[in-house]
Length: 79
Image (cartoon, rainbow, N blue to C red; front, side, top):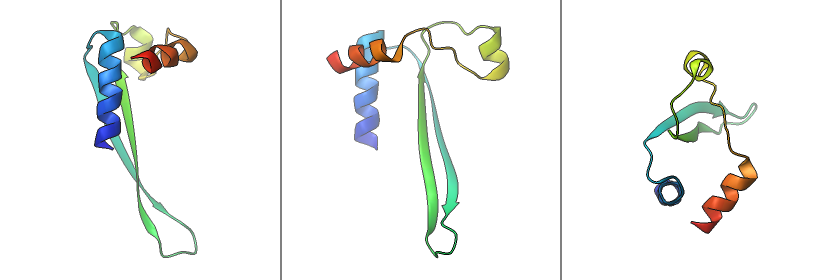
């Protein structure tokens, strides 16, 4: 996980000129019904701060993406 997170941060720094980030590590327990196995599911959210948030983002926590995902992926692949 650390190596993947580091690679993501290095690429984002190269493309976005090292912006500040918000990072969330979320976990939730999971259990398979009828089985003894259980554990936790981890999810990492990484949000580079590239502009000042507007009222909608502040009030709802919903972040507006102003860049097409395809364009962002192409930039990160080239980093």
